[in-house]
Length: 102
Image (cartoon, rainbow, N blue to C red):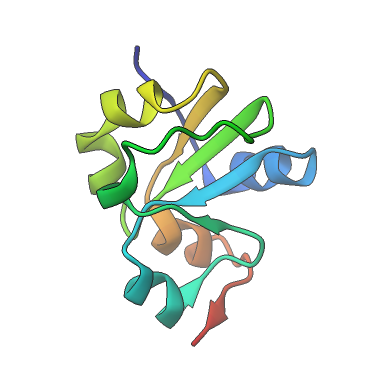
């Protein structure tokens, strides 16, 4: 199964409508800078199922490379409708959307 790729603005709309934003970066990266409201679920822990997730999930990393490279693992961790934020947190910032720093 492949995930749908969406822009930062489209991801924001989904999150505003109740989607869960999951940051797959490691905890130290998340602690340094994150998208408010995003849940940190590092790629290194992706074997743990996301049982309590809402029906829609948007995954992101720093630039989008890790999410693209790990699409299959991400899709297999949940039955939710899943998306990838193209460009990661960097695209989110470029779109003028808020981030929280350390």
